[in-house]
Amino acid sequence: MTHAPGTIPQRGMAQDFGQTAVTPVLVGGFIWRDVWASPFEGPLTRLWKLLVLNASGPAYVSRILFGRNLVGSAAAKTHGRSLLLTQWMAPEGKLTNALADSIYRAGLGTFSSQWANAIASDHQIRFCNSCLSAGYQSIFCQIDALLQCPVHGDPIIDYCMRCGAPTPRYALTAETMAMPFCCPRCGGGLSLPTAATASLSCYERSRQEFGDKEVSQYGIIADWLRRLDETEIYWPSAAEWRPGSDAEPPDKARRAAVFSVLSNIVPFKCGAGDTAIPQLRVATVRHDKSSVTVSAPRSRKRENAERIAVYSAICKSVRRVLQKYHRRCLKQAEAILHVEWGNDILWPSSSVCPFAFGFQLWRHHFEERRQYGKTGRTGKLRLRKRVLAWPGDRGIDSAMWGEFVLMSLLANLQVAIEWCERASSLPADYGRPLTPDVLEMIQDFRAELSPQFRAWSPRVTYFEFSRHGEDGLWWAGIAGPQVRVAGDRSASPLCIGNEYGETRERAHRTA
Ligand SMILES: [Zn+2]
Ligand SMILES: [Zn+2]
Ligand SMILES: [Zn+2]
Image 1 (cartoon, rainbow, N blue to C red):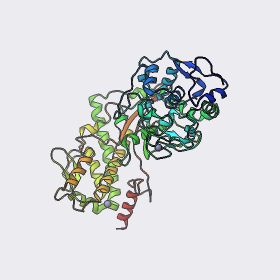
Image 2: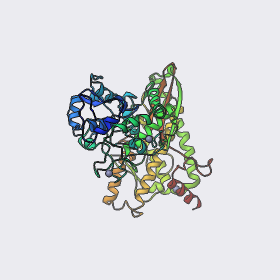
Image 3: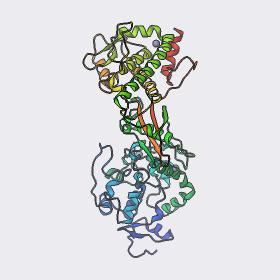
Image 4: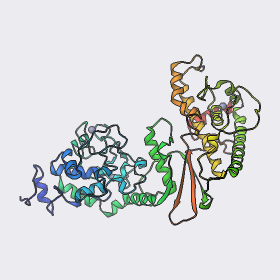
């Protein structure tokens, strides 16, 4: 067996060197051949192969390739040595070392500098088992909304196939790089069967397996991201959006929801790749660009009057529906609901119908201070100034405002349902006297119970977009919780697509 001069044969690898048709060469100080990496392969498996073939440690590789030391930033949202967002490798945007440059360019920022961080994370390695068994992991697997490998149809997972331990961070860290292709906890291969870690022939084979045809499935995602970057999107509050309940990690849920909204703006069609489309309601309204003007004070006044009229009409029809099935609940709620002096928190002191609570919570966010416990009309309807100015001076019309009002209602109903679910483990009269449990609950919900903390629900988000080449046109959009009109559709816009809501409503109807 012979070795090319300049290569360093490793024990156990000598055989493989003999089998490969082309002798590995030194690239940027490491044994490497470009064919060992495939299109859309993320930096992770590229680095793992590099470490295996060169028997190097992560600190050494990081220093030689990127001139950086390893850092420990376990708690940071984006790791200081992230393999998802690779800007840290090349602050100037280019690397002279060709190998280092190819790893830098394998990051997700290459495909979408704007959205990489909003739809994907480096929190954990996400992979397709079949892909990883062949030594390949696509950068697109880090997109939380992608549930299935578009090549194999396998689920994309974030745990070890052997012991079930969560995968480490998608970053150049000592832990992630300690045993390439293996689980740091059990030491076995992350995938089944294990990627033949030290085998050059395996990498050559993986390239054949991920030939142009297979990779084109991942290419669809790359094209989509590029089209997305060509669309002008204004969405400053995307990072603060709280689309779901607390049931799942909020950041993860938000990334999937942001993906879902973006795939509404630029349609995403990925053959086998199944995506998580959260239960969302997305509405877009087309506008003429010339209409985006900051309103003059006088027209502002007229606009406000129009907005109040839209709100009032929606409020009346919602009340009508509620009166039909929840007449008694509404009455009871008046006595149970309190507004805290000083912080404006609205909360029920004993068990309450979530529809009545949600309805009042919604009104509490829109209408100037009302007196609970008092029935009868209290004069002219006045809306809170901050909510009336939603979403700032963006020149939207009353159709969009109506969508906002409606989505806010659904968001508040969702909050009320979550409150009632949590309160169901407490005695019915939980508010008297105030127990630590109830105080904690108020504390957890406070941001959504008082317009003082947030003028409108964090579950509702506003965005705008326009496509290149379509001058004069833009779309205003809003996304929030999904409504599924269940049962007799005509009667009930309040049946939330949620088992709890449905059974609750059914119970009320038969009561
Ligand atoms: Zn796969
Ligand atoms: Zn394991
Ligand atoms: Zn009710």
